[in-house]
Length: 285
Image (cartoon, rainbow, N blue to C red; front, side):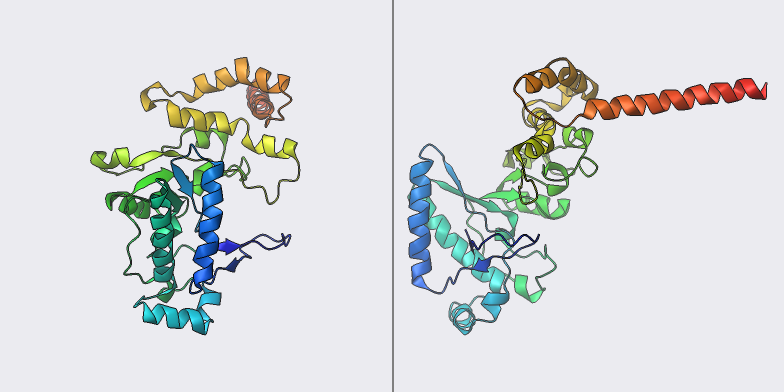
């Protein structure tokens, strides 16, 4: 909710202008937008406001914004973002909903190359009932967020981003993702509400290509979310894909990524190597 949207520029990166939060009309505008969102999703208890990848250059170069930061005794642009995010949270709470946003809204961490250490100094504290949608940062940062009492949805981009190719996030890597981070004290496990898997479409030109990115990894994420660790087994999962899901997706015209072909090819290569080794042993005799 922190960005106004320009025409797609055809180049990867963050290109959006930042709202002038010193202007009272900005809050009025966002309240109107949120009213409509809440009406559209009337059964939803949680409203996701985004809040990620805010570039602070425009705020830092604005006399109006820098004056506003000083007048409100804020320490940095990140502090201003938290302050304004809490205003959004108050509005959403007043509508009997709960705010959710990407983990940049907590502040205090340098997650992007375009932020400086002075940008992220904070004294403001994010509203405690916020659901933090974790996508970027270290496990220590995730554990710190949870230990501060925030509920978290774990969407670590290294494991859950469906626009990443299968070399970066293989089916097995997706399947083995554990939303509950390593070294997290058991008393905090309930703070992990679940996981999210995201399909970003900047470079996905067709539905077929999109489906290829999503399927079969989405089935792996389903097991991550709804199958207990003791009942998970990657080999059994592969068998279920081959015996049922691939057939169902084919019937539905879903262009899933043909992992079975890769497995078959790998097996053939292994068999070929084994056969060649046997031949070499025979020759050497």
